[in-house]
Picture 1 (cartoon, rainbow, N blue to C red):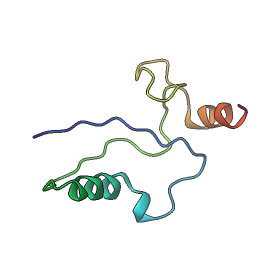
Picture 2: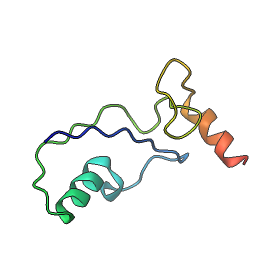
Picture 3: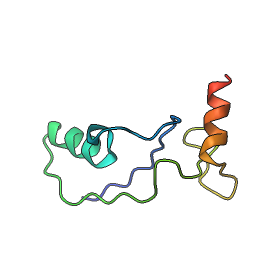
Picture 4: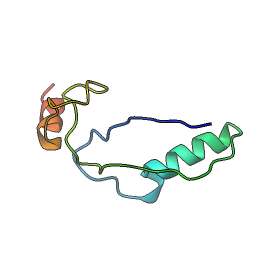
Length: 75
């Protein structure tokens, strides 16, 4: 089986520990559900440009991480 997941880090600061890493979280969740987990590949970094709305279109309209976070904090 192959799984592709798009997810976003929407907090201002970088994740501080390895327990918040995408690899750890995905591997742990799948193992808890009874799956055998092979290689996990993560593309991108925590502060990359992202859609203005969570899950929004990943196209040329993406905004810088700092702008997205400022908007979330002002709500």
